[in-house]
Structure formats: C-alpha cells, structure tokens
Image 1 (cartoon, rainbow, N blue to C red):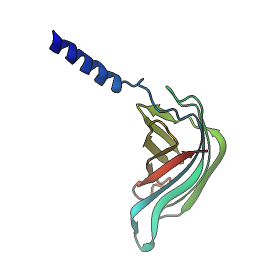
Image 2: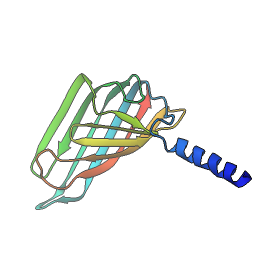
Image 3: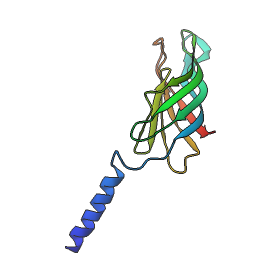
Image 4: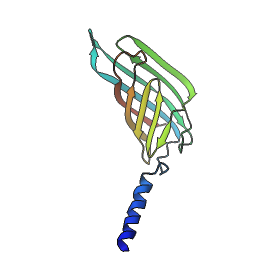
Length: 149
C-alpha cells in the first residue's frame, strides 16, 4: 500500500505541474518591448540586403489568467527582398495575447512572439518569428524581450 500511495502523490504532482490552469507568472502591468528578426541569407542579386523586421513598443497587461487582457502600442519596420514596409499602432487591444503554463505568447504585424515567464517577472525574453507580408522569402527569426516600466 505504501508504494501505491507514493505513486499517487507523484502522479498528482506531475498532473498539477502540467495542468493548463497551473499557476503562471503575474505579468500584469506596463512593459516596454523590443524585437529583432533577421533572415539567414542575403537577397538574390542584392548581397547587401537581408530580410528582417525590428521594432519596439509598449504592452499594458491586465488580468493574465486564463486569457490576457492587453493593449499595445508599437512601431516596426520590415525589409523583404521586394521592398520595405512600416507598421504602427497606438493603444489598441491585443486580442492574441495568451499565458499558458508559464508561456506568454502574442502576435502582431505578422510576427509571433513566445517566451517563458517565471516569478518574479521583471524581464521576459524569448523568440520571435516574422512572416514577410509580401510573401517574398522565408520567415525570419530572432529574439524579443520586455521589461517592466
């Protein structure tokens, strides 16, 4: 019986740690973020041109579980092999923000952001993947981070 009790405790702990409702970091508040994603090769016929995106902005996160209530402001520029384009918004809802099992994710301007967040969360950093809006070339990958204001 002792072995069965130990197995039950281990199973209960493992299940709780993997639960979608398990505790996540408290990310509520105002954050400044930056990102940069660059292609791995230059554009055909233009060796000095490399596709990529970079930008910065602010996230204001309210309730962070189960769904994140968020607004955002940002400016970003992207360069593809066909041309350049700029994005920017001021104080708009960010409906794509999610915090699941300690992973914070959101999408904006053709870029998908993901990072692991743990307590105490004063800075969060992760990976970003951007898709060129003109379909010219492969996705570009890079890093992003956000810091509490």
